[in-house]
Length: 435
Image 1 (cartoon, rainbow, N blue to C red):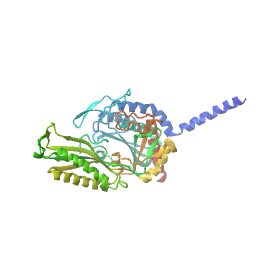
Image 2 (cartoon, rainbow, N blue to C red; image 1 turned 90 degrees about the vertical axis):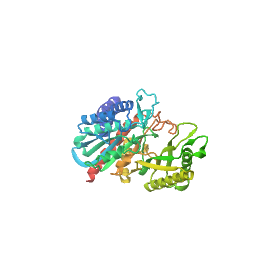
Image 3 (tube, rainbow, N blue to C red; image 1 turned 30 degrees about the horizontal axis):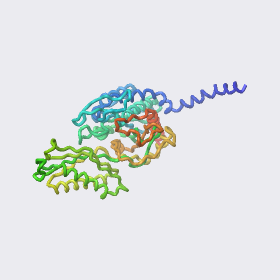
Image 4 (tube, one colour; image 1 turned 135 degrees about the vertical axis):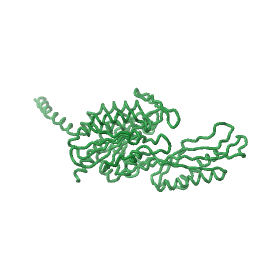
């Protein structure tokens, strides 16, 4: 008798539970889209494209948006794609952004869908890989677009989907690319959103975790080129010329004293790094020139200008002491990324709905950079991290973004979709309620 009663209760209660579960639009959409998003990601991963060359990726995105009933704008910022979804109810405007470009990295993951693509980057033959996770970003935003399109009739406001090229920097040094180029070409001219949201998969968090920080949390990124001009001579008679290689070495070491002795790094974290030195062609010839290329990372625009001035002076004085000349050129690829405090406070609960309150963690400031900041300097921005390192794996040992071994846990696709979709719906609903 007891078993029969339990069975009877279950018969009535289970449909109610299932109905309650399906009433959650985020959960229902995420479940329906899960396999599609994984499939999209693997396809994109197998066919990576460098910045401003994302033609196949852009075509995949544009075709998807058209199939959802939107009219995408293509070719903005070289290969970017943008489309607007108009909801059936009046309300605010929001932009959602994903970056599309891959890196000049030869993949070593051994995945069955690993990239074997080869290309050329700044005159050098390279492998191409989605070593930063932008393939996940694109797949997640395609999923969010499909979910929101399915809610079109009841959706308040309008949503712009932005698929951006060249986040990793311009293919040619000094060019304008990525987010800034899209803005320069009128991305927000006819549609200025009330907020812009974005996400990034991140190896320094475990799968299932989301990371967030209010205010400045990613540094600005400058690409600098320092050219030292000396005078060529035979390697056996250095006194007969001016050695630019020695001067370059002196400048490189001297530049570190700027950070160690001239900047208050307790208040203003700064990184000044040389990533490339080129000079000479033969073992016994002192060349005319030496060129160094590197990056400067700061969180404060005034500190940035001060460090550039000090670097230019240091290089000039070292060069002058040896009879050489030094010319420093600095190209700003991205300002510091800062989350709008009010928007962060408003949308952090959305992340907690998606991941669970205990899985949303405060992240420190990072000296990595993101040109999402270009959008967030125009309208209030909210940017968060999605963990990709499997639970139980030491974060310090996990291959980091940009590594040829970076193989993110694909559960990040589901959580990223849920978090971005939840934040979007909560923003639109909250803004509608406040009108």
